[in-house]
Length: 320
Image (cartoon, rainbow, N blue to C red):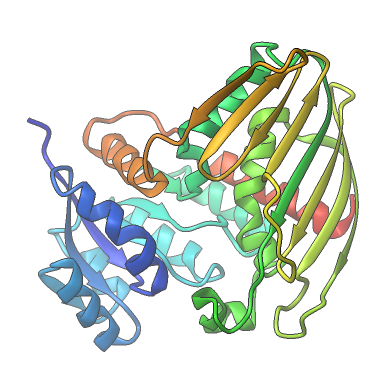
């Protein structure tokens, strides 16, 4: 029987409760959530009650030093995560950190270099990378099922206002990281696009801030060209409502669409193949992280890959 991963949670905000906890409860046979901490101790204590965590620490440093903790999940403001990531790695603790990898590309590159000097595993929690139907779409393209790719459309349309719990986080209201929500949410779509098409060789874009409460920008539109010659568009807007597929791919033999819960490919003759999401993405993400630490499996989502996703967002924000 495989032993359980002993995980400590640094940051017990809305993501920990709404996103991680359902996955961790599903993985009770694989992961023990042994400790948690938050800068507001009462919030950590409330999370501990709901999650069944036995130890609440007063600081990230105390949690990292806890011998009962062998790995940490870091869910903090983007600009402060690298410091705690390196502190945990120096202590020999494996790290799963929220996305994006860092506040800027320069900070991300510095972090990747510093982290590579430590033996403990380090993974970024870009959960799209663990979705079965994302891999299936990439496989269809790689196998030539769509023929020659002519054009791709990436869409991320989300209405963000005070009713959205992530709007309420102070560090998102006054972001120290590039791009605001365009970067925070956009690295997911960047990962999907890069997985399917590779990095674009040309990026031309414009940005805007329609809502003054969503700094520094809430919208980015780009046109792209890929090494294959295929063209693409990127639409990222957090002040618009829409239900378009997050990715459309047009090929000489077939077209494909990718949605949060499925992907489908339709041939020129009208035959449709559909791939459903197999499980909750955070469950797959935490299971993989446990396997990396406990079973010594290779990382499916490396820091270099996460850095590449941030680089693409940075190029879109800069227009080149």
